[in-house]
Length: 390
Image (cartoon, rainbow, N blue to C red; front, top):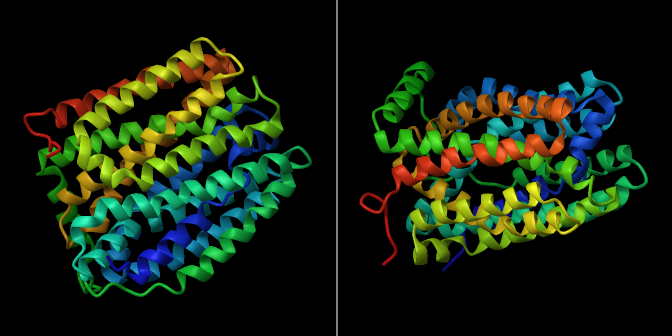
């Protein structure tokens, strides 16, 4: 099977975009600058609030003017975000960096999946979307895994040095984005953006299956991402700072494997068994590690991430199947908009919970709440309506 040039470039772009040495120590750095876990988590909240404000306009932007230009704008915003994070001796600098990060995420959200879908559709490979979605997304995790080790070792010397080193891959990602070509399947449209948004919203609310999938993915992402970003605060109570990156490397390596083989695994087992069974198993393991914390807990929690890669690909494929071609990016952005709002609220709540009661109660709360989206997936994809493996 011939791999389109855009797909190869997207793999490298994803690798560079998530080559973030600061990721393992982000909550520690933000809390050090701001003075508390709640304010540290507020940086993540600010990024998602900004994303939510920009989400729908950038989705319309993508559908109206093109996928490539949208990616380039996102890459430029990522560079500015890391620059302000690196400057971040003041809380306000971190907030500005968070706003640019939210803008970058909004440009990518909906658009990059649509870019991949349109590229494959143009070469007659639409049915292989889940396979290539998994393989290109795996590069995010490869970048995170490699950079996590570098970042944790540098963090033992200086958090500030880690932040400045993190700027370099963002600049390289911007250069790669300039080499993309606009898929011919997608033709920039000359439409009224308000009418386009109204139609996208209508298409979403009139599709009951899509509504349930959206609710599950929104809650799952908001709760799961908050817990993931906060996990370093738990690991540092069991491991030294320089070792945090190794726990994240294990997690990212597992997620990369999950993403890479997701297409085959989904065909073999089906979305229902993977989303309901896989998520349930992961959360039971997380619950045990939090309730019985030992030196082995970070490694055990990291090994769960293989399910993250497979399940993220399954969710994306299910939702892309429900989206319309004309509003594909905007419908994806509407879903991300809601997810960003829920994440912003929950992550700040989680930080405040940790300040008040401790790190372990905060993680315990998020783990128990994650069973809500698992139940929604079970309802939506129960065997009578879900796709099953051949």
